[in-house]
Image 1 (tube, rainbow, N blue to C red):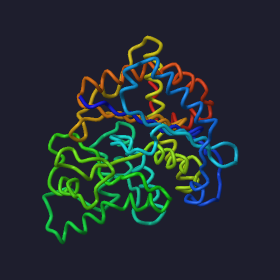
Image 2: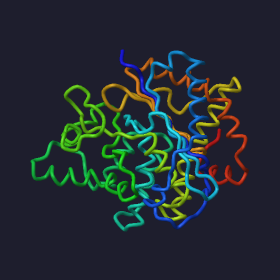
Image 3: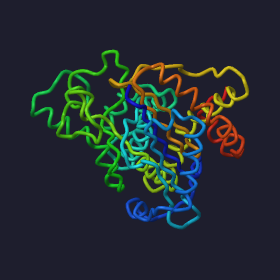
Length: 341
């Protein structure tokens, strides 16, 4: 069996308030990021400690990016295979959430009640059908049968608009061009036509002869986008605050459920297991306060469940400590849109 792949993007710190409001444009700000020997040594020790705790983990492909925004100086970066792309599964949804607000600021769309509802279900429940509706609105495309070459050329151009926006920010290693799928017949026609289009192939190898144009993200690219969100550089301060709280809402609920498990109580998860988005299988989750994005690709459902249990055993004490450290004001902001029961 092919080794599973694991990726982390860690940004410190990010919560429902901006780390700092700056006016340096996004591209110029990202250009100031510098490798840090101190952070790298700390990360290397942490990775080795995890490998020692679980020898099986050493046989996986681990991808990590750690970005310290500091206190006004250049951001410091450490990474472990952080520039190697991976299929991101549902982690990509936070990029679509940011894109919706960016496009509204640009006058390209309006977040009306219908789109707002789809964004809520996409983030709060990780709904794939809602993500399909969001991507349709972002790209001005609709699902349907395969298209003629002329009509497909228009569809293809529209499907690249989120990636084009990311490039204007100075991020070139996030391939965000497809929604996520449930695998129950929702991937067909022009969507499959686009996924098979090798002229816009992602950085990932094709799954057999199919789907060379899959979504792909790197841990470093993910951390960079989260850094722009944390410092109000990708969106206006007001929209950055909204996106942070919308994203935190679901993650705070996830932290509470993890805390219940650590305390020996029933987890009461929203969903125990979902079908994979694409052939090969994938599961993903993300926590945004320290902006921890955890991507895991597996070949089968049992491996997904086993890894989720192992991941929780690694991280639940730290997760509980992070939750305990949240200020009452931050929790109140998030509780407005999150259920903590």
